[in-house]
Length: 250
Picture 1 (tube, rainbow, N blue to C red):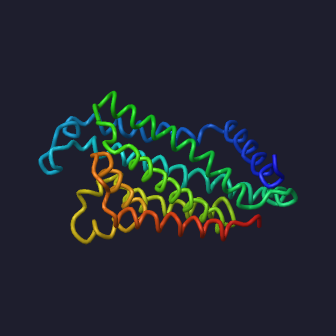
Picture 2: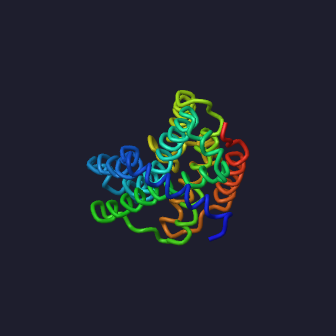
Picture 3: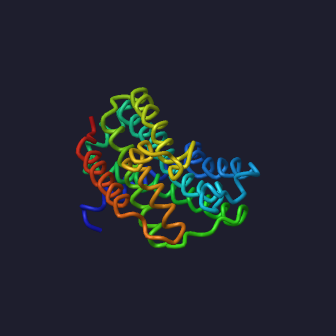
């Protein structure tokens, strides 16, 4: 194994073991989105086809939304808190004395939380299919590609918060301020497809708004609007570059 990859692999193993010792945060990433889906699925009208939605059901729209919710919980609530606690407790300063680079701990956290998001998403899609007869994505490869971009955009947002926040309290405050608008743009309170006029156009320019619309199209077996894909790609690249730029040991 090359010296360039050894610190990264060691970092990933260490961070993975630490996460397994504190499994509470994974509940909100893996289980909570599916629990929310089940709560919504218990509403009879949400399981009935709606003419206003083109003959589909509200519960069909919410499977992609809870997939995004898993990414939001991991990126804005869990990961920044972990890294900020490391900074506050001088863990990052100790890492600075090793051959590891700052981006390697960021990548390790992205991999670990990305795995949690994937598990939560698979659980949500499986429950949606088996319990509520939600169809599997009609364009699975496109759906997967949009999902990956959405996860990276959200993790990059969390990485940027972790890089800028000087303390755990600051991280929690920033994360909370970003958290609620992000849930709105993902469609947690109201599906993005039913947002009216200018509001819908603005939300479609946000990373999770574009992702929600693109996932809906891929789920229905259609090609997503190119604008939504480009918006999501731009946010993913831009936020990822900023996260890597501003994350430092100190």
